[in-house]
Image (cartoon, rainbow, N blue to C red; front, side, top):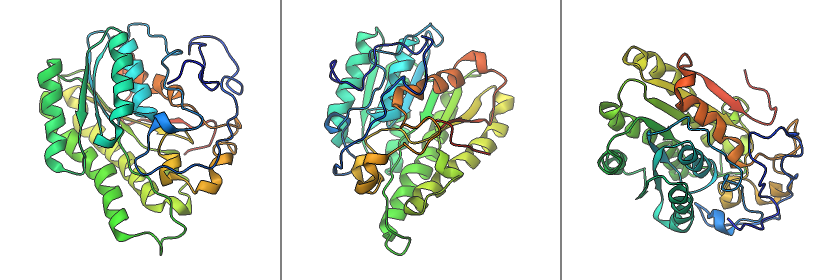
Length: 306
């Protein structure tokens, strides 16, 4: 992320500030990237917290795996975890290597170990493979963030290709099941699993029916698994972002003509930046949330959820 980016704040997240004006109201120009998209090529670039996330030692000595950790929310979470004292492994698609290198740079400059795990999570073998590599290279695993996702907008259900529906469920739901299942034997009591769902699980927009359906499934998975794992001392929760400016949006995740107005319909009047999600993940990963299980924490700019 360029240090002179006008949409990157250097005011840290612990400073008293007005949430309406913490970030400028962005009006992204119409832009299209090939899926999965690169954060490095977005206009404006999202803020993943390189200059604004200040850690307080809440995850000291922890070992985390973040899927989709190369950009957007996953990158912001990886940066925040590192600033809080955790070593972090990030999985990402090989096409996203440029973004992954930036996240690794920030993690290592924060004094923590970083592990790069390229590959496609629609491959069942990779889902278990990234867990095994994380455990081997970090010496264990006690935080799992299932964040990687596929999102493609369509004009109607009739125009949504069957192949896309299958791929979206494979990437968003099946990969979450598989990575979590592979991680369970390695997670000691006190561990945390955090799944990324979305406000669209409650307010499904017609162009994103397949994506919204997967996010509702992740909500359900979270609440059921939380009950199963509670007696083992493993907490399972979810975060539901609202409209956040990430590479999903210009890589066909939104109709291109809608990008200039992205996020402006929220009560705060602007899209969120990825780093604004990070404190929710840190809270759910840290021991201070020891009595929080099966929760879906909404970070939506005021968009209501049940």
